[in-house]
Length: 354
Ligand code: GDP
Figure 1: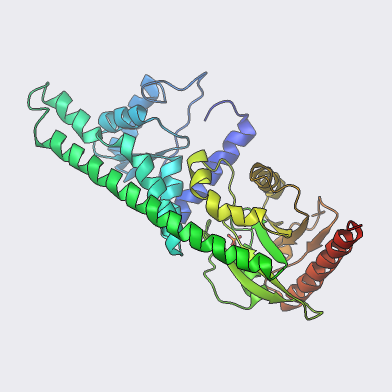
Figure 2: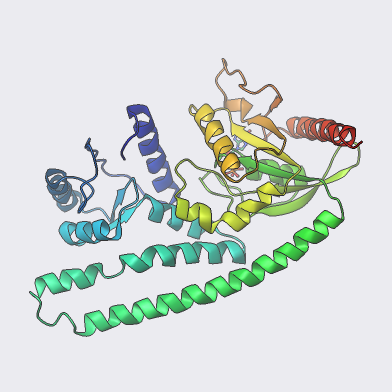
């Protein structure tokens, strides 16, 4: 990683380790290097690459993960230099996690598309290795042909997925239009991944969807009804968990899903207040909400997991509720809190009509 301070660096490495755990992996060694700029051919320097090769020989890990995005040629060069071990970057790791977590057809297709588009320019690592070993002899043999066939196959699949996604998006548009026509009040849950969104969503809407103590348990937006204490029904949407340094390719891939956020009348920002880096998470979410063009939507904050938070915890936002999703009484407090926020907004809305 480059151009960031030591604290951000440490934080990012810890997050990478958490992502590895989420993908059911185990970290056996960590290697870091301070450099002015990435090495164009191998990302890390020559000496570091040799050190890494020795470590790979000694520990025989299944994977080497770079906490950054590698260019196709860097990935190829590293694969060739490190031997049998598979080399991936942060984006590929996140894609792998997304692939495990996707629930809806759209989510699954979006992940597959992002994976294939990422893979396409990176194909051919083996081809390069073959031509090097063969000294130029037979480099246009079956290996090369297979590579071309693979590429063609992947391109065709990419086209098919895009067409399918367009169909799904059109369908969703119609559904969205119907929802707007019915004037349903829409609340979108946003928050850093693992903050407790799914848990709160399920408790609020009394539904049983996937909830797990892992990053990215939520990948697809889900919308369900929630009844407020006054009897008024609102629609609550659960959204994809945000994460720092979400690769731009992924933001693009999930744009249509994330767009649900921009349609909401109110954002309910869930923060895991027991996490030591919660303030950093909060900032990341606000930044991503702004990037989506949704900062004008009113937002209220929920500091969740109060059962585990530090005794000296003080909320940074005033319009906030401190609660625990595991407490039934707190879920009722949240319902009342939500009702208050919605009422306030409706009053403001009507006041603005001449
Ligand atoms: P999401 O990624 O934001 O959807 O997070 P989840 O709803 O999947 O929750 C992540 C983990 O935190 C799960 O293991 C939940 O059981 C746990 N969790 C959620 N809310 C609370 C809470 O208030 N207190 C505690 N101790 N754990 C919670």
